[in-house]
Image (cartoon, rainbow, N blue to C red; front, side, top):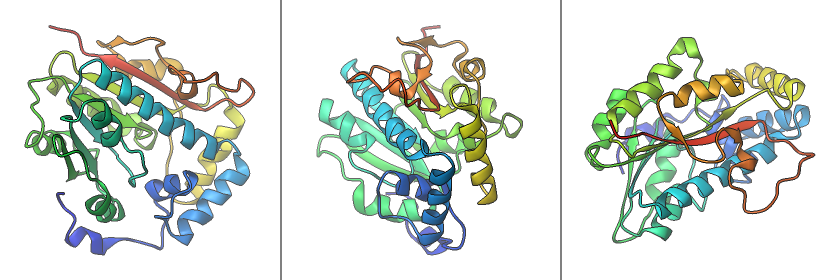
Length: 267
């Protein structure tokens, strides 16, 4: 694993961190009281937040499994967050044991746990890269040490882009990454929306803001802009709970995250 040494000494336990709040929503134990406090505050305001976290995780697993079954052998997961089993490499390598997976994050606590928990199959490769999601060229440079970027790669941006505003380069970030990948590569993306529960989402954004975390909710059309030039797999851009569900989702409990998978066509 890359970058687990000195960085692990820089964990800030005085401020909540999105990855650790997400871990708390998922029932994990790799978080601190400040993260639990913000998580409880958000859940009290928006009771759907923990449900959305679970649905988002399930979307990642279904999308990864579907792409591995279609022959994708390389995966680049940016904004990994704290490892929560089953993680992306476990899903991919359960379908194709020789899959190569690169995780990217810059949170010291994620780095510390990654070195201990991210273990793949003997045939495959599971590696961790320390980098900021807002520096896509550095990510590509480091990932190229593990992945063959001349062959298809599944790029996962799961619950990441709602932390990056358009004016802060969200579209440039995605375009730079996708442009560097070979035809046949895929973009797997999920991000927050206020299309389904506008008031709940507004309150949730305010709660995160009070904890020092900025969130951006995007409409269906705004999410679609990230997939410009890509061929969307069925069922297109939908709530993560409705992307190829294994069982019918509860229609009375909407999940305010859009999810989709797009394929880069041949030039």
